[in-house]
Image 1: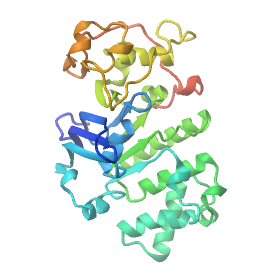
Image 2 (image 1 turned 90 degrees about the vertical axis):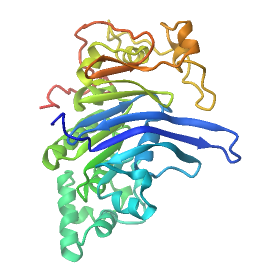
Image 3 (image 1 turned 180 degrees about the horizontal axis):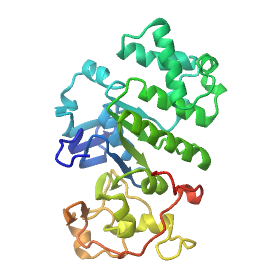
Length: 348
C-alpha cells in the first residue's frame, strides 16, 4: 500500500446526532470523527456497545433512521463528498461502490424471497446481467463464498440455511458488484468460534482476490489482533486512539484502550480479567471534560474540566488524552476470538 496515495475514503469532522420528536433531546452519537482508509487497507473500529461505531457506518452509506441527522462533516469517497450526493446518486453508489454486511442476517435477508432472487436483485440494479448470465453470476458468487451445490441453494429461502451460511450469503450480496469498500458491522457476532474463523479466513481470501478495502466494526479484539492492520478506538461518540494493531496491544496509549485489553484478556495474567468500572456515559448528557474520566483510574482535575485534544505519540499513533498511559512492551500473547480458536495462521 502506497502511503503517498490519496485515501479511498476520508471522513472529516463527521457529526451525527439523534433528535427526539420535539427536538428537545439530542444524542451525540458521533461527534467530530475524522479518519482515512486507503485502498486495500484493513481498518477496524472498536469500542463498547453504544460508542457510535455502527452510526459511523450508517452515516457513510447515508442509511440513518429518521431520527438521526448528519449535522456536520465531510465523507470523501474517491475525492467526492457523499453528503452532497442526491438520494438517487447515493442509490447508484450503495451496493456498487460501497457495500455493507450487517450483523443480523435474518434482518438483512427477506424471508419470502429465495436466495437467488435476493442476490440477483442487487446485480439487476447495478449491472446489465440478465437471464442465464445473471444466473451464472449468482452461482459463481455462492461458490466464491463456499456455499456448496449452488444450483439447489439459490432456490432455497433464508430459514433453510444455517447461521454461517446466511452470513456468507449476505457477504455474497455485498460483494456481488465488486465494491471498492466493504463495511462489515459486527459480521461475526452471531457465529460460533469455529465458523467465525472460517468466515474471517474467507473475507481475507476474497480481499486478496478482489482488492476490496475492508472497514470492520467490532468489539471482538480477536478480529482486531488477527485480521486488521490499523485500529481506531471509539468512546462516547469520539475517537480516543488510533494506532497500528500490533502496537496497540503492546503499548495502549489511552486509559480506555488499556481498560478494554484488561477486561478482555488481562495484561499481566490472562486468567485474571478486570472489568471496566461504571457504565458508558449517557450520550444525551455527557459529563464535562473527558467523557471517560468518571471511569478512569488515572483521571485528574484537568480531565474533569477540559476536553482533551488529540496528540501524536509517534508518526503512526495518536491519542485523545491529557495524560496518556503506557504499559511498556510486555510481549502480550496475541488474543484469540472469544479465547478459543487458533488464529496463528490467519494472517498467512
